Length: 88
Image (tube, rainbow, N blue to C red):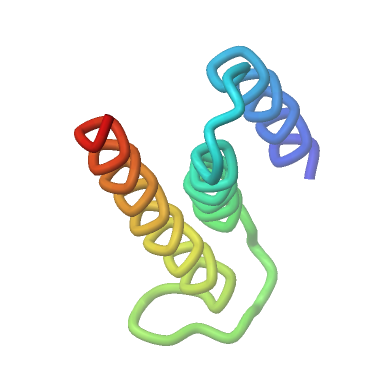
């Protein structure tokens, strides 16, 4: 899809601008969240038949896993950074 490609290019630009600091894990977490959101929204536009469960397509379930994993990773990195900063 063109929409997914454009969304990923924008996401890469945002990651490059926001995370110029070498903060371990934050850019990966942001990518997982962004990719999950882009993929979830692109799957809403699909018209082909696909395996679905609980009202969501399989790709949307995978996207939700990416979003949740990215949020957990973001929280973990933030918590680790706070603990490190307090230890100084």
